[in-house]
Length: 240
Image (cartoon, rainbow, N blue to C red; front, top):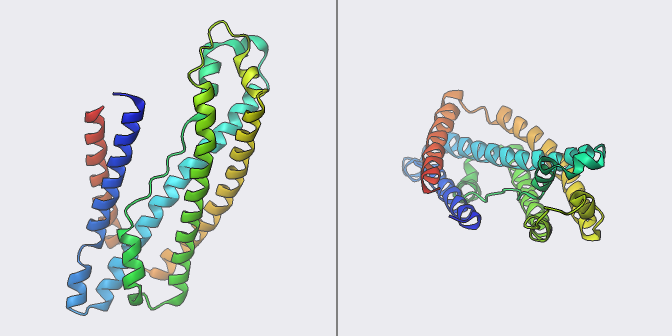
């Protein structure tokens, strides 16, 4: 199975996971409407929304870690002598900076339920904070996807290059003008994502305090989501 096929399968699996979790976490909304139980709606919608936002924060944090790795790798390379730079281990570690930043747009089921049934969240401040975190999620997604396009150009240009017999291929790459465009994009995104994450994390903490959802409810939904994620990941590993 090619890497491209594996990547496609993983995206499909993650998309399916988002849909499944969305259905799971929002199950019971229609029933709650039927019995006019506003409090039940509030708990379910808000709990599902919080967990959805937590997953996005975790995913964006993983992207930030990869961007930090790029900076750390380049700082390490700048301290290497020529012999170390020619070492195959150094070369392949360097190539890791061109890895794709993975950002999966989860099924919007939960977000749409917040939008369409959010009137059950009568705290305006809470609704605004939730909307703000979603906005920063969307902004992060757009910028990550833009960076991945620049990254792909570099990946295709360097990753399959036969480094055997080439003197200081790392230096050769770093002296390429197009590589500077990649670095500028990486450092710019790193700064932006770091700023977005601080805001998202702070707002999410405030959301949890204001929402005051019973921990038992949150724990139950998180466990269900984790179990489903493990099932999907196991299925994906079997495909590999």
